[in-house]
Image 1 (cartoon, chains in turn red, orange):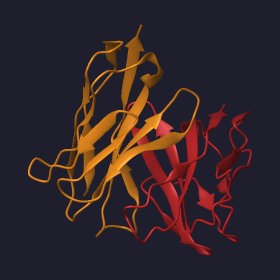
Image 2 (tube, each protein chain N blue to C red; image 1 turned 60 degrees about the vertical axis):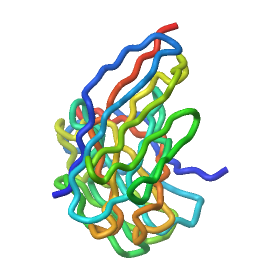
Image 3 (tube, rainbow over the protein chains, first blue to last red; image 1 turned 90 degrees about the horizontal axis):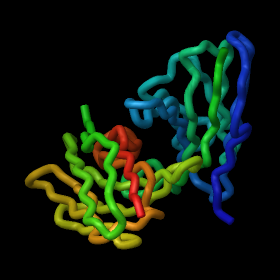
Image 4 (cartoon, chains in turn green, cyan; image 1 turned 180 degrees about the horizontal axis):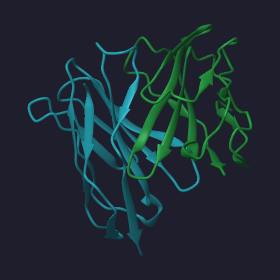
Length: 115
Length: 114
């Protein structure tokens, strides 16, 4: 089954403790992206990747890192999490970032709470 | 920059009522337009899309027409069901913009009562 898989689905942690949210897709998609969803703000893009070893900042990259060493994986890293990063996070992928008519496929989300 | 504005919710309807969720956009190029739906506890799923002016996207009884003259992409359904309760997001991807990144509206929550 074609899917985007995020782990963990839920995490409660404390300020400053490094964490990684994994994202994996099995559709051989070139483009991958991370969003955060906050009430009243909709979805905002954190980082995106056009292909392996190619990443770029989205609208709200501060406090986050990403890597794209393999095509299928796109982990989101919070080196020193802070309470303002408490949010619902979504990973997404699409066949190509070059053609704008390609829909994105989303994971089920990761709810992070930073105390 | 590019942006999407959609009507604020929540929207509450009775089963079999007619649904319209308004969406307008601002873009410098010729964007592709999308509606995504998010059911409770799940990620976003593509509902429908339109890639050029006057295209009509349709799926599961929902439809939206790409109107370049009014820069709109309103979502409609003739008869909603309880199972349509979800959050709906309008989004655009600018063909001349940054590598097909999506720009989302803030979402409209729809609740359908039996």
